[in-house]
Length: 128
Image (cartoon, rainbow, N blue to C red; front, top):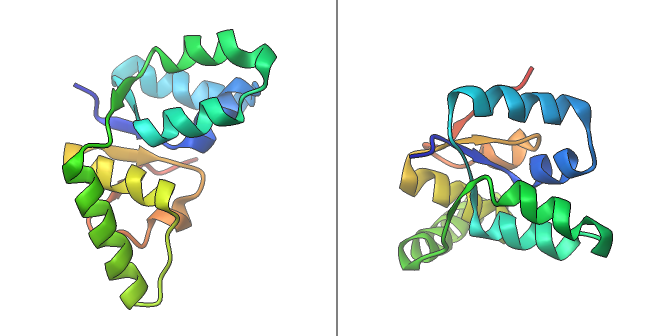
C-alpha cells in the first residue's frame, strides 16, 4: 500500500502546473504509491475551477484515498485538544491529514512543514 501522503497544497500546485511540484510528485511516484486523505480530496475539489474538473479528477484518481473514519476522527479531536492545551494550533484539515498519516504509518509531503512539525510522531518528507 501507499507510504507517502500528499498535502492539499501539493495537489493544487500540481494542477496549476508548478514545475517543481510536478517534478517532485513524479519522482516520488516512481518509487512509492502516493496517497491523499479524504479531506485533501474535498479541499481540492472545493477549490477547483469548473474548467479544471476533468484534469482534477484525473489527477486525484491516481492516488490511494484514505477515508475519514471514526478512528481518524477521534484521534484528530484528541490531537487538536492536546495541542490547544499547549497553546499550539493546527487547522482541522491539517490535523486530519496528520492523523491519517499517523494511523496508516505514512510520511507526509507538504510545503507547510511548520504546520505539521508540532504533531508528535509525525514523519515529514524533507523537501529540497
